[in-house]
Image (cartoon, rainbow, N blue to C red):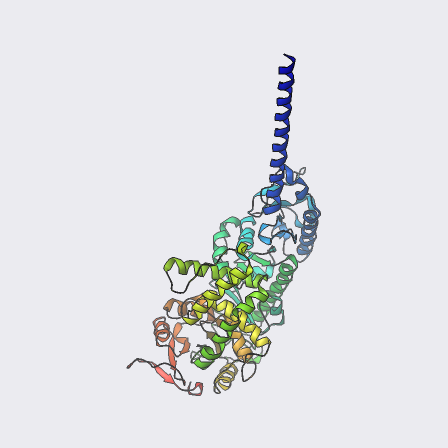
Length: 553
């Protein structure tokens, strides 16, 4: 009996030890899950939630909200801000999110009032209720919109402002779908923009409840891949950046530019033109690109101005129109093809290149599903940088060879060419009649835009680094395939809505491609076909006016 009892106790002790080991293993697995993705947070992650990085971010949001209150951005409990908890050991998509609460006095917030969210937006930590007259804590109504910026743009911080400038600028033209301004120093504070660039900010319509804006904001982010902000009519603006410093800097610049546009408009001046001259007619064009009835009164020059129905915008193609086809086929394309591997290797870990890779992955996946010749699968990042780059290079070379007009390729090419121009390995080429014509049109008050299948960056690089110097001061803006395919009439209808004219026939489109000319004509634009050395033949009896030089226009 004694031996049986001893054996039983030994077995029981062994079982207890196994259970302890199992418990320890499960605990370690839980801790590992926390370390891997930061989203499966339980009791084992309490130390993580109470870390210095989290507490510092809460303090930062409190400080910023007080500053934003003094700027008029978050008065009346409106507006909000959210920041990701920066940690070098945690990839940005997996970092925790700190978010200010909704319906509270933003200038009186304390660090303990903040919400802590997982990377997918689920609430991990809620602030404690405060006594009357404080309302029960509630996470920001902007939460779903903030998460879209994190998800779609890999943002590090998002600011929602109710600043009066961001509200009024959407009310100047109630039908405008965009805000536009150019040639202002503060544009340089907006990511990816320079002094000569035209800043374009999409405008979405307001709704009764903030969360109902989520879908339209997501569509705007997708439709404007370079924007870092979305305006909400009669409401405010959402602004994001790679970090809180980037978001704050851009927010200050956006509000400055909105205020400048409002004041220019009050003076009868056009913020969307390079010279900011008088609005040209009684139905003037404003920075947002849609006209309204106004009374121009900005001094003698403006008050004496008469409506001129013949004034129009000119939209120019590049390849075969302003620039020899050979420059694109014999210089730009080979440069991009020969340097794609080097560029990807040198910039692989940057946010810009990661965004390029994301677009290429999506395009290649679509190509594979459609059986596009030359498409090869792009492996996941865990196979190593070299394997990913090799697959990217193979796909890009195939796309260039097929001369595909797709955003993913054009965006990457633009970044490669930018390096070439910076290193003086490339120089843009335009025909000799182009600079004089651009200046003439500009001086006469005609807005000139570029519409090319190349990215907006690639377009700016050609005209900013041309064989006749920087020509961007004569250009009012750039359109690429994000507005649509150049052989579809809807693309030209979209451009007409953006450039601010009374009717499509007030826009002249110049191109060397017959199919583009047909599409533009179907949209109601006036069309001229450019005849240049090296251009392809036109069909007989094509029916379009042709020119051999811009001096004929």
